[in-house]
Length: 157
Image (cartoon, rainbow, N blue to C red):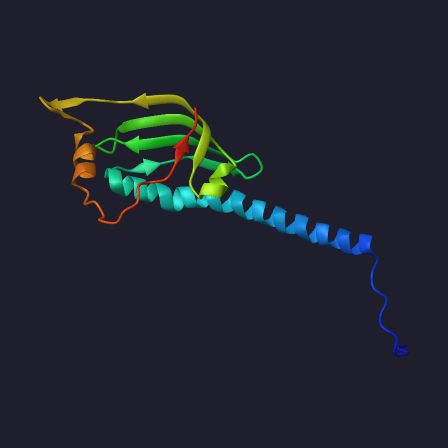
């Protein structure tokens, strides 16, 4: 029954509890989205662009991101050699501990970078040429954008 009186408002603690539950739910949802999208971005966007700029096939077995600790880890990184049957670079695992200041600068700020078991296969193909010379030539020949900003990142010691 409505007798014309205003509805009773909830107590302050109930409104605060509801607000905190909604805020915690939104934060957990954002963490979940980050845990799924960061590995997808690395494998579907970053690796193909890296392979395109190097002119080599770049593969990775697994990428994980922990949004609570800001740790990005990858296992089984492989960059193919000029002849695709061989590997130019293999890395068992890479772990990057990102700093919380990455969010402030909107650029990767790496506190710790750990690379496990890197193996590089180098071969001299001519007097002044190596099997990676095509990568160097490709990177040197890439046209520089006139208004390009330098890539923003930081690696702290």
